[in-house]
Image (cartoon, rainbow, N blue to C red; front, side):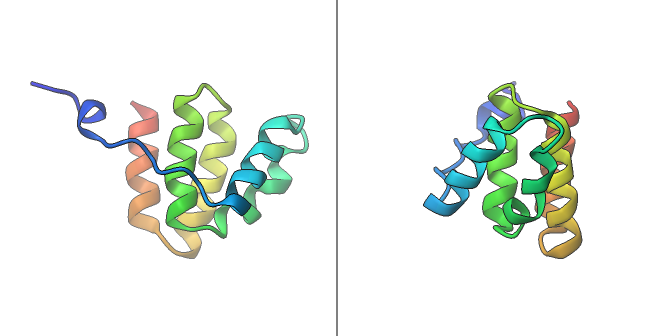
Length: 89
């Protein structure tokens, strides 16, 4: 039996704007990274996929959870909740 992670396809590359935001967020200090949350979350489903990749790359799960929460409240609650469950496991 294969795991769910093995069945998932890799996340697509984020669009240029989202990619730049993610790069800036990754380079920001932990104290200021949260300032990128809403701008990243505005990308909806693309942000959800990007946050899953973010955590898989060993980056801050706290930031990813904050972005996923914002996306879930604004637009894609199902997608955000699914990624949160995968991150938790």
